[in-house]
Length: 167
Image (tube, rainbow, N blue to C red):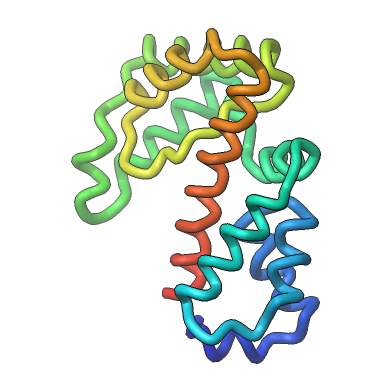
C-alpha cells in the first residue's frame, strides 16, 4: 500500500490498518485522526508522538495484541516455521534446541507471573537463544522499569509494522 492509498482510506478503514500495527485503541484511533500524512516521515513522527502520549493501560492493551508464547509446543512450532523463512532471516535464526525452547517457555511464564504482562521483545533477527538471554536479563527488573522497556520494544514492533504496511 502506498502512502497515497493509505491517506485515501476512510477513518474506520485507517483505524483497522493501524490496529494491525498496534492494538492500543488510543494509539491507532489518535493516529488515524491525524491523517492525511504528507510523507512517511511525518507519519512516523506522528506515530512516535501518539505513542509518547500513551500510558500504562495503553501499553498493556498493545501487549494483548501479541500471541502469548507460553508452552513448549507453540514455541517449537514457532521456531520451526521461522527456519523456513526466505532470505537472510534463515541465517539469523539459529536452530533452537528443545532445552532452549523449554527454558523460553518457563521464562515467559515466570515473566508474566512477575510483571502481569507477556514478554515483549523486538524479535526480528533474533534467535530463540538471544530472546531467552534478553528475557533472563530483564526478569530481575522492577515492574515500572520493565513496563517502559516493554513499551519501547512494542514501539519498535509497531514502527516495523507501519513500514511493512507501506511496502
